[in-house]
Length: 69
Image (cartoon, rainbow, N blue to C red; front, side, top):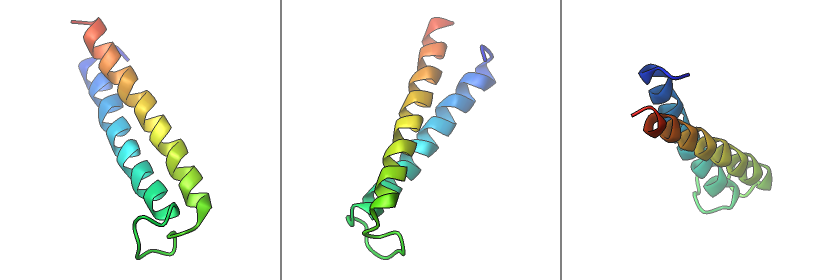
């Protein structure tokens, strides 16, 4: 995964996962109304897990990018 495209893919997928995770967690915590997911703590946990995965991917992508400069 040392190619530029691979690093960029990690960063983009990480950001998307982080954003989706934040939305899911917000809906699960009843902070974002208007969905069947609102207030369901299952989505809070799924969102938190997805956000953590997103952060890990983002850090890996940025780290690989800075190591190869």
